[in-house]
Image 1 (cartoon, rainbow, N blue to C red):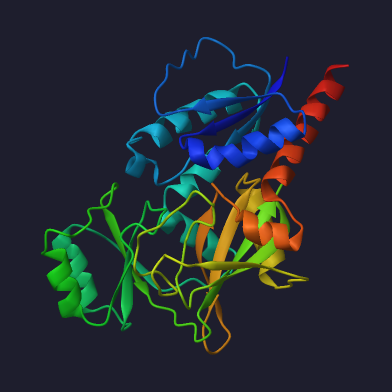
Image 2: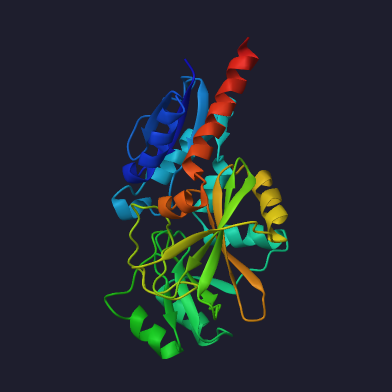
Length: 315
């Protein structure tokens, strides 16, 4: 029997989706790809496969889960299985630089960013970086990894040469233009089956949380919108419109991305800077309950739709 397969490495993030799949009576199986064996001489099972692999897996002790997932996705795609969030989605999930290059190819404004490998190279680039203040972040990130705000070069120099310096898992640290939003909020656009679902406004005046999931607690201090990640507030926006939406949709379609959350911040001149494509998107249940929407239920229904199409094609 064909099933809905969920590829992941974080049990707590999958719980809401499990509940939604069960409520929709959709047969499913979870593939936790921290460890495993892939026999490429065998064909994959029949079904629909949803890739929820995260760039921050190494922070949970799952260092090689993305690399393993990359090969599993190649195996699935080789055999023509329906994959939601294909191999390219994972590639973008694991690299901010690749995200920015893809966004730039669609004419989307991004913060000025330079990538550096090595402490000496990072400091050299920071000494001539054209923006003050600026932020650092990890190229392979998630959870706000390595995101700090610096007013001047000397502050970064002390940090880089201190024991508290966070080495990126891929060795790449980004220097990025700091975008100031006077109202202290960012906007996150959610997409289901490649189409815009809703936008959520994240109030950063009392805190900022990159991950909206109920189970997600972020300890970073700085990000493109500043604040401590302790009391982040989420509000689903009614009748949200933006010229970015059709551009985002076209980009997602080209890259085989079915489900994603894309974040942007607007400066005092009204320019929107897109800074994150999250292909392992989560949702805030409190904000969704108030707005009467449900991201995980919509994902479950999408998986059910593709399962029905598979059964129809077999008749």
